[in-house]
Image (cartoon, rainbow over all chains, first blue to last red; front, side, top):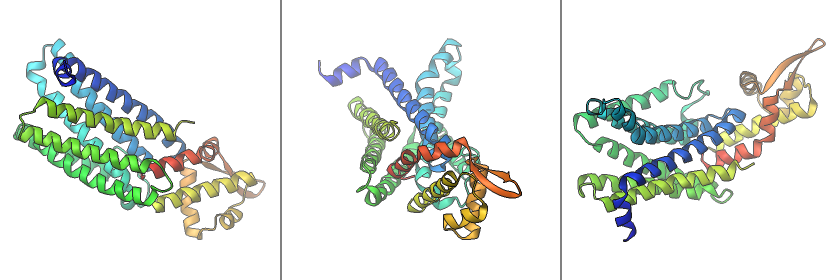
Length: 227
Length: 89
């Protein structure tokens, strides 16, 4: 049995393990970056932490909200909640990651709250609009479009950071690679949705890219915060 | 991003000046920080609001002293700087 057949044959269990690994990675990144944020009160670190907090919550809702709904007998009426929460947290995670790279250009004074400021409210509003559009035209098409664009911008910004700090620091190169992987994953996701009827072999590649994306960030965070 | 690194460095320099002198008067700290009076005021207000430093009365003189949080910032400065630069924050 080849690897693809094995994964497809054990799809549900592997999805659960995949979600648990990503949630665990996000939890590690959030706790480590939160420790540095509390020491420094640096807003960039705070937005970075929020990005992975939202990613972690997104995966938790995507894979673990179904079970209580089924247990309570509410799944047939409330199945869409899983997708709404997943989409909201995933899109917001991407926005927070973007904002962590550009906040110095947009904030002249430090915002008191990183979750309830006026600028972040714009991201909440955008996320809700994306969810509504995907609800009215069923599927994740608008999310795919926004995330692909977002990761294209993130790739450009991280490349610029790599050019600036790459000679003195090791991680900007990996950050740029992680963004490219994220971009490829979203492009593949879009293609799988539009042209390949969610072909499972394509989706396995998407999952693999996503996993490497999170592992790269975990590597970077552990390396910097190892003391 | 570069601008932010400078900011981190300024904060480190101010905190280090306070640590080295223990209780430092505002005028001496202003000279040591090498900032304009307005910028100095902004930084000091920020450091006070984030509880990195506190105001103390030393006889008739007002001085600044480091808090535990300020000391911890200096101890972890390298890691903070590395984090900010590596992740482009």
